[in-house]
Image 1 (cartoon, helix red, strand yellow):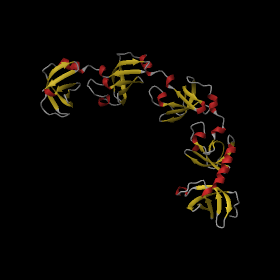
Image 2 (cartoon, rainbow, N blue to C red):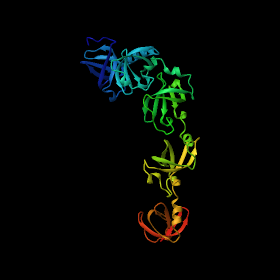
Image 3 (cartoon, one colour):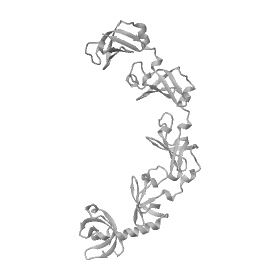
Image 4 (cartoon, helix red, strand yellow):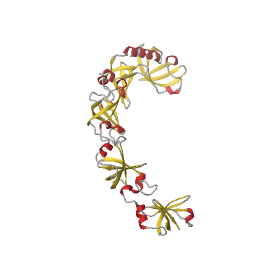
Length: 386
């Protein structure tokens, strides 16, 4: 107690609650914090909490402290710091920001208030570093580093949506990229706006041209697009091919509605209904990624950036081939493909036929062999009976 004076600020951990207040101990000195001077909740949740308080008086075995007086001093000091650039020391580096000390007052700098750019602050600071900060919120003791620096967003206030600018790719993410205008201002380029294929083909540090979609300097918001400056794949496709052309392509990806096919470096769509002459058959059921084959161009819509191709229309119609090689009454063999309430469908190779429930007597399961005679040939409608 010899080194303590009335009005000194002390820091200690609360060890227990007693009648009338809280007790803590540090360096062999016992501190008593009356409840009326604590500003704390009167429950066990405060045990273990580290607090700061001002020395109020000395008792025989303890030092009486006043936390409310300390907090009032802090509030007054913080009010005097408003809008001023002050020195601070980095106490701790956390993923979400920096814990700092400003003339004995602890504060926090959120990571979004450290740099104007998306930079990992943990790579730039060490505990003990001295920094310049400005107070943003005295109640929460939130400070900012970047507000002490020239604001690069002031330099882009003349830009408007539709303007084209040169940028450098500064960060790559799973959902797109961030691009730097060259002065520290970063804009967001969503993956859907990188190109017409929706694939992130950018590299870190690459210089590209983009178009501004949205810009809000006051809220530090900038969205850009690159694909609007690129030729639509359907426009490029239309310069080479026309509807009805037979083209060679490679299956690159399957989706719910069909498959993507690459033709001369241009990705087009093959819907499931154009994959096969068999009803209900999906592209993923009969092809695999990497398959190379011929397709017929069905649709080219440059304005909508839509190109549709068909595999089945690039092949001889198997139903026409069947009709040329068979007649009503012929016996055929196949496998039960699937069974419905009204009958079952038989796989005859490149085509399938229907057997109505009244036209077969036995019990069949999917995969069973079926032998029957043709009772109808009508386009893509083939009917069999036992």
